Amino acid sequence: MNNHRIIRYFSISQRQHTVKKDLTLAQAQEHIRNPESSSHSCTGRAGLMRTKKLGVWYDMNVIDA
Image 1 (tube, rainbow, N blue to C red):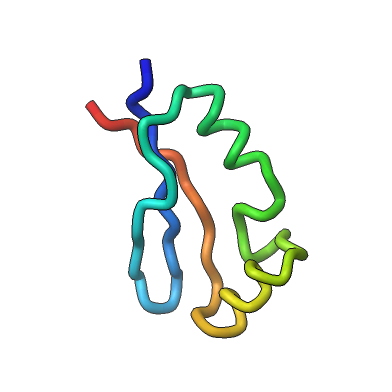
Image 2: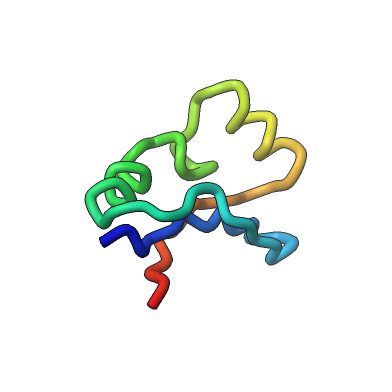
């Protein structure tokens, strides 16, 4: 069932927004395992720029009931 979504949470501002939706559990887990899903482990240009601009962030899996 596709009832998972990925939320990106910004620690400093406490802002959040949906990055992906209608995912299976396996798809959500794959996204979260990716090093680019957190400011602590990302190395890509987009992630590094996001961290520089907005501070610490991470992606989390949310189950929609």
